[in-house]
Image 1 (cartoon, rainbow, N blue to C red):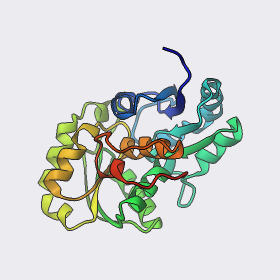
Image 2 (tube, rainbow, N blue to C red):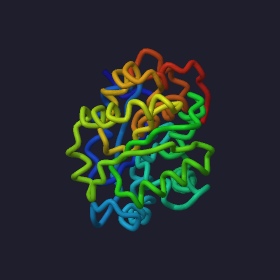
Image 3 (cartoon, rainbow, N blue to C red):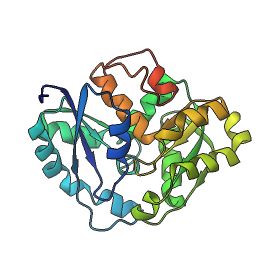
Length: 246
């Protein structure tokens, strides 16, 4: 064993307990993933709380750069779309300016995933309060994706989102089967929401593609490295044959 591997760096919110579990399970053995956490005074699911991570970005990114990843992923969906329409890549630009390393945010990864699967009309599931949901609907509309409808667990804190089992996400989706079947696909938002072990089951049951925040984030990182995602059993997105730099 040695440390001579392809390497991805991941920045995540301090209370996130799901990203490491899901990425470790579905990443290929040939790629190592290293993590660092941002700072956040409180875990409330509010716009001000999510944006409060910004001052810690330089410290977290430059510390993570010491492991020399080829790309750094900013693994927070709402934390990367709440800065305003058209600014979803701003955090990635700052990370690259601090470190000299390419970076991708979850929000941008999601838009690329939609493009890869030709998804322009989606049903959305989130754990967010409705003010954050409305911001996400506007973000997706800015990129040409219509949210036909959504449902949410409406969690007030990060800890409440962490308590949701992935099976609960599936149950919520199946309650909306008819609406989802009228869309191009299902989008499950939030890197704290466990989902990836349910994607293939949901795609089989609903017969539409499923995109989730952690799935799209990992896919974007592997795609940047030009590492194939075929055979990783995380849904149709991972089976897309196109491999290109984001």
